[in-house]
Length: 344
Ligand code: FES
Image (cartoon, rainbow, N blue to C red; front, side, top):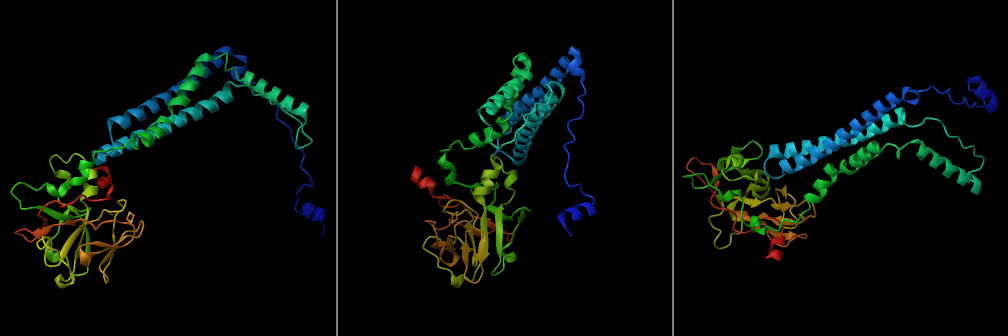
């Protein structure tokens, strides 16, 4: 069966005819100057929505700075998202309405027989482009032009501002020197260790040999003066494991930092700060998934492989009178990457 027979048998015409453009229907704004002015105002209104949304997003960024509390972070992100979304939406709707209601909708057709136009064709294209720009009447509508410039200039701000603002260097390196474990409740011998995210205190008897727990200070969100909740939580997180005491090497001065084989080490990698969370029960090795630094928990979290340059800081722990695990002090060295050493 030939191609022609095939196409005829399937009811497909052998060639499509160009149906041409439908007859032009005049819009109200083409014939009524009042309608054109009304449409222009609507476009300006949409651009104003975009401007106000962008300003609102920027205001939200400054009113609800990140790193203070979780709800502030959410409010700030919501304001930025709404500012960016409405800012772009306003510009998009204004552009559509402007094109549909105000721009000249006469079709400009250039018949082309070759892929590359000759010089005359190119000159004609430029001429038609310029005619199109003139048709848009931008020069005769200064209000529209100004509103468009304002909206286009301000709408990206909610996106750009956090990128630039959050890259601002913060050289307050003293914050590396302490964590929320230093903050013990009044009258207590130490801050209890709690499971994240349930905030449930953990007893020594809950930690069996081979188990591993992701732990933060108990009632961290309730601590007076802990206004930078997320920062404090990020710095304070520890991994709690239990080994046979005779498997562990304990150096002088650290004899009372563990409790019957239960040890707690900072989870913040000393390379560049990823969470060190892969515990290999048989070897007692702790692996950082980012660049494979490996720490030996039987040897005070010494680095045995990878780019990290120092051991994970150990949190001194004990138990209180009710059998709950407590931190008897803060870490004895800064947690996290060792940048602070270079900045001293
Ligand atoms: S951050 Fe842990 S190895 Fe790089």
